[in-house]
Length: 252
Image (cartoon, rainbow, N blue to C red; front, side, top):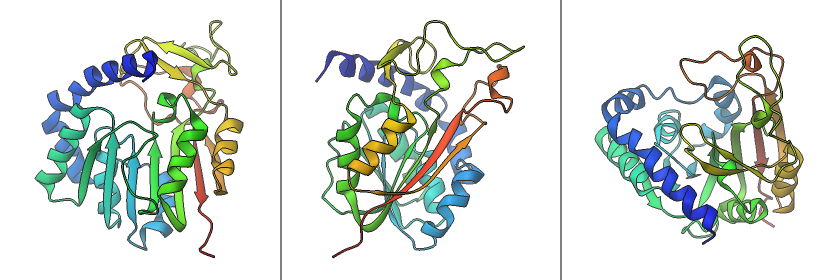
């Protein structure tokens, strides 16, 4: 395992302690089944009507998994390389009687059989942990049944550029859209290495893995922002998140 991956795993295990400390608050939020954004629900609604079996790589605290089942998914298998996060997520699902189960594993390398999912759901801070995006995309494609779908809702690749100035949006002088990575010293990364992938690289990886891209949308709103911050970069002029929906080829 690469040194950066090892250090990132340590950083994420530490950050995931938050999911244990705030267990009751997260359980209460999970009960509402409201963690999916309306933009996600709009794109996922037709797929969830078919009661899909879902795999969620990099499942984090698992609130989106509970929301997916509440919205119609048959079941969700979450995969995360944090034992702390996966254990807390499993406990929440069990407490609520929701059909979710969790595996501790690195992605790519999901320890599930080929063609086990109708839908792979991922994002919200997932792709920045991938140091080999093509390998990730092939692993995702392997999991999908014929005509199954991949759905990503993620921070826009340009987000590392934006400052958090409140008066005007600015570009950080120490960042480049085309850099391979940067060190994020803010929570929850805590000094972890975040890999950068342009929107073109993400789409190309998905297409090269054999999937057909159906939708790519870009949004001004971030999927996450600290409660005590109000950066000008989030006020509608710049891209801060995106969604991608792709489909596996049909059976021959």
